[in-house]
Image (tube, rainbow, N blue to C red; front, side, top):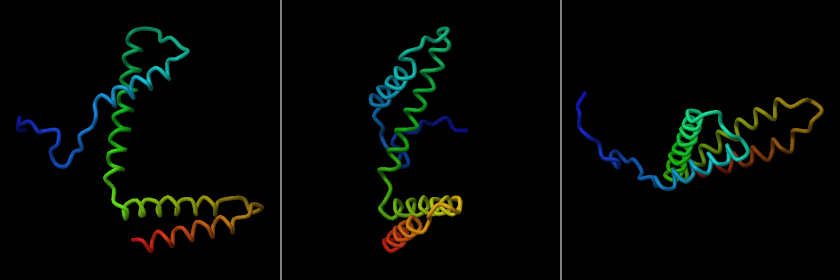
Length: 115
């Protein structure tokens, strides 16, 4: 394996604000431990590690969502609506499904026309 360094902006990787990520991690940590006290320092570190990992995942997800095109967003929405249609079909028989099904199918048709 070569020991060359790869710049942070290589291959289209977005630059992320590390300060914003750390502040989100601290906000999550404080929220989790607002009314509790962990048993020891190791628990503190493990908990903050989990919050920092969550903050990085959130930042990466938001960056990926910002780079999506309108067609990609429409395709994702069509997939979500298709799953919702399957959930509607699984409802009990006494529940009315027709109005919800029509509304979802109309939205799917509109989104497919955009693609």
